[in-house]
Length: 475
Ligand code: SAH
Image (tube, rainbow, N blue to C red; front, side, top):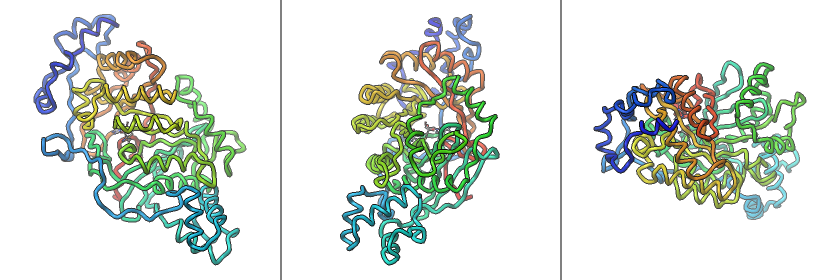
C-alpha cells in the first residue's frame, strides 16, 4: 500500500499553470519510470503504464474567456423571468396577496392544499372553492410553468425522463427513479449551466437563465401527479431482491424518514408495502449548478420541506444538493440550519487535473472545496458525499485514489463517503468510462485506506437520462 506513494507525480509546486499544463498533456503522468518499482504485490498492474488522458472539450467548442481559460457564467443573462406562482411565495405571502385581491386568506390556504397535496392546478377539480373565485385564484397563483413535451421510460419502467418546456421556450429535464423503498427525482435548477465542465452535456450551450423557485418545485408536483395516476411501475420481485444485494454492499439506505413523511401524505402508503407512492428523495443533479442559483434553490427547498399547505412536507434529509464546488455558497449552505445532504463533484484530488476538468477550480482549488465540504459536515453533522466520475485513463489511477484518501483522512474519519460513477457518454466525446477492473481497483483502494466508497449505478443511460447527459433538446 505504502509502496505506491512513490508512484505519485511530483507535488503541485512543480505543476505548471493551466496553459502549459495542456502542452504537457502528451506526457504520461503515471510516471512510467517509477511505476515498475511498484508493480509488485501492492499495486495492481492496471496502474502501471496507462497513459494520462487529458480533458478537453470534444465534439463542441468550449467557450473561453479573455485569458484563454474556460468561461464561467455565474450570473444569468438579462432575460424575462417566469410569472410568479404560489410556490414562489410563503403561505403568508399568498394570504396577503389574496387579501389584496379582495379574497379571503382562507382561500389561499385551500388553493395551496390543492397544489401541494393533490398536485392539481385545474380549477374544475377545486370544488371546495366558490366557482366565481376559482378562475381568478388559478390565474393569479397558478400560471402554467412546465409543459410536458416528452416522456421517455426505460423498458423496465423504473426510470422515466421528463422533458419540459418553460414559459419562454427554454427546455429542462427531470429524471424519476423508482427504487424499492424510495422514489428519487433528479431535478434541474437552471436552464443550461454556466460551469462549462467539458465532460457534461448540460454545459455545452452555456447558461440560458436561472429557474424560478416555483419552476424547480413544479417538477416535483407534476411528477407526483404522474405517480398518483399510476404511471410509475411498481418494482418486481427480482428488483427488490437485487436492491437488497446493493444494500448489503453499503448502498445508502438512510432515507427512511422521508418515507415516513411521505406515508403521512395523500395516497402515500402502498398496500404492498414497497415504499412511497410519491417522490421521497430529491437530488439536485439535473441541469444546472444549484449553488449558482442560490436564493431560488433555497426558497424551493423550503417549499419542499415545509408541510402542506405551506409546501410539500418532504424530509430535508432526503434532499441532496450537488455542487461543482462554489466554496462561499457551500459555507452559506452549512449555516442554513437544514439537514439536507451535501455532495461535492470533485472528480480529481489534484489541482493539475481538476483545473482542466472542472473550470471553476480556477476560483476555488480542490483543497478549498474539500475544506468547505468538511465545514458542512462539522456544522450540520451530516455526512457528505464526494462525487467522482471515473473516466478511463484520466482520473482513475491508483495514486489518485490514494491522494484522495489522504486528503479526506487528513481532515478526519467518518465524515465523508465517496461515490464514484462510471462516466456516461456525452455527444461527440471520445472519453469513456473506466474499465470495470480499474473501477473496482479504485474503489478497493479507497476502502482499504478507510474511506467508505460506493460505486453508483448509471440509471437512465439508455434514455440519455443519466448524470451529465441532460441536454434538453427537442430532437
Ligand atoms: N452542477 C452540479 C449538479 C449537476 S451534475 C454539480 O456539478 O455537482 C450531477 C453530477 O453528475 C455531478 O457530479 C457531475 O459532475 C456529474 N456528471 C456530469 N457529467 C457526467 C457524465 N458524463 N458522466 C457521469 N457523471 C457526470
